[in-house]
Length: 285
Image 1: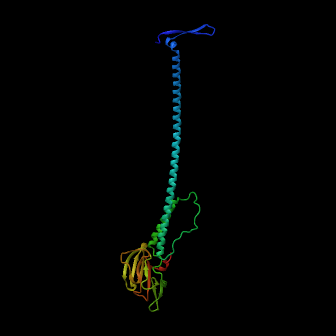
Image 2: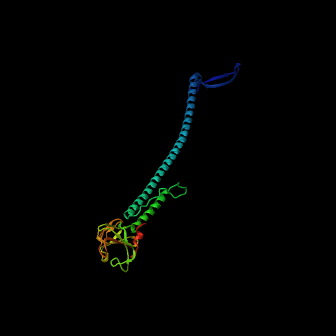
Image 3: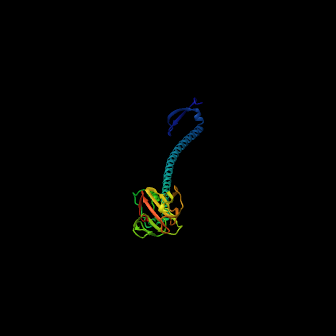
């Protein structure tokens, strides 16, 4: 079909021939169809190129936008994480200071049982926290440890009074209470009371003796930490047994006048490594 040729003569406006060309007869016969096909093919090609360019451009923009969105999401996650960490730190601080408050409450309960004044925090303390100061959590842990150490020491230290009665005979040399003559060493403190009044331990410890012991009458002896020992003498009866653990404020016996006694009172002694001390020095902190 394309082998059959037709001569096409190109003529100038003045009628002179300029150029002669052989083209397939099919093209000459069906030139309208060929032209339409060419135009259609050209249009399809142009549209295809435009579509491909637009698609690639869209993909590029989408990729850029996706990267920006991913970056914003990452920054948002970091902000959420920072907020979570701040909340966590706040909770840790609250827990730390709550534990300090709990420790102070426990210590105050023990002070109360011994008849001592409670520890109170100064309400006028405060101020801004300067940059460079220790971390609040670490600081609260430090104070908590200090309070725990204080609580442990208080547990074994014979503080306070075993009975609320007034002192009728102090520690040291005194006149013989039976003859009112001569001088004798009084190794404890006498506290006046009524028969049957409760007598309380002044520190945490273990009972090493509970029963009758000569001039002491009925007596309770308690061993504490750090070499301390307390003795509660002239009791009308004991309320604990040998080997029993006691806490500060526990009732160890009832006040009486047994043994070498002139009337109802408590004879109270404090010893450190078997050396007798003045108990009145331990009546307050």
